[in-house]
Image (cartoon, rainbow, N blue to C red; front, side, top):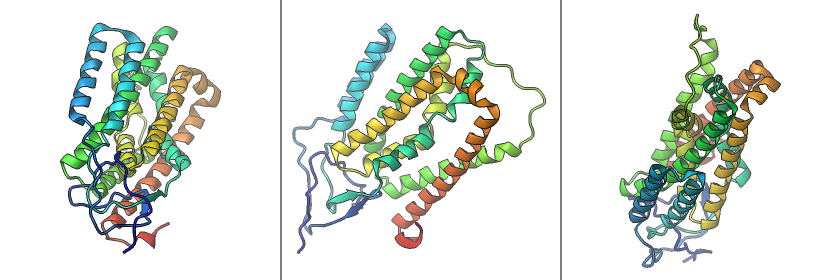
Length: 307
């Protein structure tokens, strides 16, 4: 009987309820016939951690303690996310090695959560805003996006287990949603322009939550990609690296919002439309690849039948 080269650590998130091995971005290198269960007697309930942290967030927002308080809540949410993975592992989890590199993961986040789609929205919504209000909107959108992605990643991993959602189903949902959104972007260039353009909205800080954070920065498919990538790894170090990549993309988004008007004047509206069209095509192709990957996970197509 071949022994696994590495046993799962205590930071392992369980696979789905049917016992399927979560290896979207990992390949098995060894397996033990017996059960592999990680100890978690010292770990507390993720529901308690999350509810307590969200309570702190509500107090921060109610008391108006500003960016420092929001940053502290963000750090607490990151800790809750790491603790959320300390639950027992189900049978069948062997040692796995990464298939996607961090550079490829960064590209995925840049396409799904990146700044290209933000520039036209931010410029339009702040056309009549002062420089001070623009900066406030950019910083608030940045903080809300970071907090929202951490909360979504924690809740997503918990729901995968509690609702017994297979990783293949989540991957398929990610591919379908991304395909529909990307196809709409590509086809929008063929739609007839409206006879009268809508006037820019009256700027206010309320716009930081919607439409800036949701759904412009934090997209549904970008959130799903983050959940899938975190659920596919059992290495705490790699999870921290994934969060670091997300933070890097959010910082790029922040810089883009702070200088959105200057960027648009420098590259021009036509160049931005071309970039948007290229991004749309890449998203369509990526969504089809993701759907193929989900079909291979459930055995509909052979894993080696597509590159």
